[in-house]
Image (cartoon, rainbow, N blue to C red; front, side, top):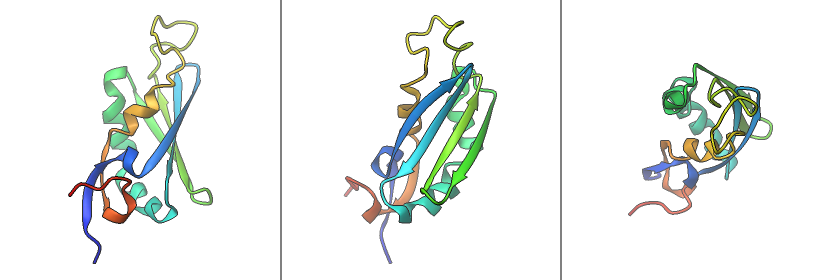
Length: 117
């Protein structure tokens, strides 16, 4: 049986961010396809909302894209009003994908880029 490790998402996936109004889209794509089902179990709408609530997020919808494999999270009210209303330095929310990549997940060590000892 494979040893499991707790790592941050950036060890097993990469992410990209886009914006539309006061919503931010964060796509999460695992480095290896076999990690996708594990990420579906652990990276839930509820956990993502908790991660972004300090930014004012009021809701999260997860879209599963199994053929890629990837998932896209649409996070409502996370951009302080959006590009035209916000004085935020990151008005488009481009850095918000890195916040998602700090979430911890438990995966087989073989899926992590740098598994802990």
